[in-house]
Amino acid sequence: MERPNNSPIYVVAICGSLRSGSSTHAALQIALSGAKDAGAEVELLQLGAYDLVFQGSVANEADYPAGVFKLREKVKRADGILLGSPEYHGSFSGVLKSALDLMGFDEFENKVVGLIGVSGGRMGAANALSMLRTVGTALHAWVVPKDASIPNSSNAFDAEGNLHDAELTARLKAVGQQVTEFAALRNSA
Ligand SMILES: Cc1cc2nc3c(=O)[nH]c(=O)nc-3n(C[C@H](O)[C@H](O)[C@H](O)COP(=O)(O)O)c2cc1C
Figure 1: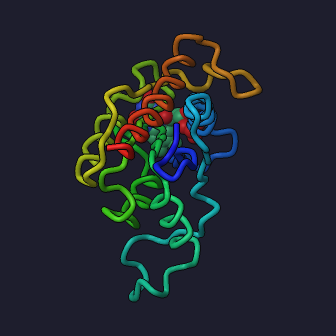
Figure 2: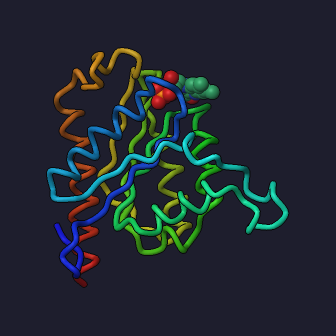
């Protein structure tokens, strides 16, 4: 999958958990492997690495930490974006929302977005996914129909970050693949 200038489609994943050993991180790695198999250049963005602040907490935007601009630049350059979040209190994580609130149309408008949710409980991350879909629409992104939800996160992965469930693995990869394919289609339009 290529851009019009023959460089590969670039897909970033933004991880909405800062926790070491995060299952959202593991799920995004699997989804990114699906994007890579479809020909994308991929990168997982760990929000803890960007020295982020809350939107509006610094009076002048120009005084935001350099990490804010670095994150914006990477997301702006991306053709496709995976958003991954744990289900937190029936929604997606505040960490992810804070990061999204530092960005906007410049980074998301007309981009292809795929959603991945992880939950500790057996009901899955349906609320996180549904709310992220709403946010994607507000940002004028094209959120692909296929998303993936991993329930029972503490028992779902082995020590290497592989899922025990082969169907869920395929579903995660399919989200990454769909984002890559639709980003390529959009770029060629
Ligand atoms: C503040 C907080 C709220 C949570 N709320 C829910 C919830 O509403 N439903 C649920 O199934 N799990 C909930 N969990 C469990 C997380 O979804 C689960 O631990 C998940 O694996 C965390 O993602 P991570 O492994 O990527 O850090 C919550 C955990 C925390 C810390």
